[in-house]
Image (cartoon, rainbow, N blue to C red; front, side, top):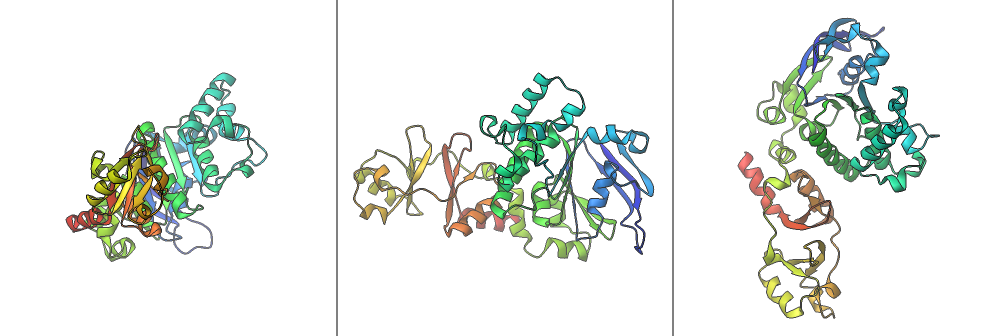
Length: 370
């Protein structure tokens, strides 16, 4: 879908090129992550793809066509662009922000409204609530979702993302990353994604391009990057704890089992039944579910000392959960944040309980990866 051929860019006053004879091929439907330290040419490369910067040498091909021969305005309308600062128009509603490019393309109003509604639902923003709101009324994570929806509005085949989740807190960032990967499973876009965070590169990329001083040092899958760094620079970028970083590559669903009845009780079960079930639990914690199997809370031995007739009277809520498409690293982060040795896994749509992921599960995956 995208081919960079001897791509070069020089800026006045700099001794070396910002991008130096870069050769790269990105397959249709892949996420290619450009990673490296500040000044390595990541963002400059991204901006040359949609001609915000004109190359000083080389050529960029989009689906086989040289972009230098395309009208730059039409080129940009066919490429989604998401930046860290998001860049929403503050005086325009969420609906108006998302519909910017379709309006420029003179889409019919009913088609625009249908597209905006679909995209808002895809990125987890209820149109009934957020349709007419201004960006100032949204959280940072919600504004970032609007930015992604706007970039997708005209259904472009290519998406450029420049540190899109860098301005939000770590927990929101992990959530946005997971949501975007879920969207990508549905959309199958070709994406060029810029980050300085090697962990994000490993998690997000089908391929990772490591840049240094405008040159390509290594271009490989995340697994290959961890297994065989091309040189000392890449090895230092990846770091020494590569076994832990492999947790970014494994989804919870790959190791989670079906619902574990021996660690669950329904909310109206008796104290006697709770005590019997708790004796079987390795982590000394019961998961309380409703009649449909949706997670409600937790009960431990301390809770059983309290007064109450049924599980619903004694339970506490879980502070955090993970979903099946979270990574094992996400699960580890939640455990460390909560000070627990496990975290429950639920279905995001309906909250149905599946299983728990434990620290022991993660340790076994780390050992197997060595």
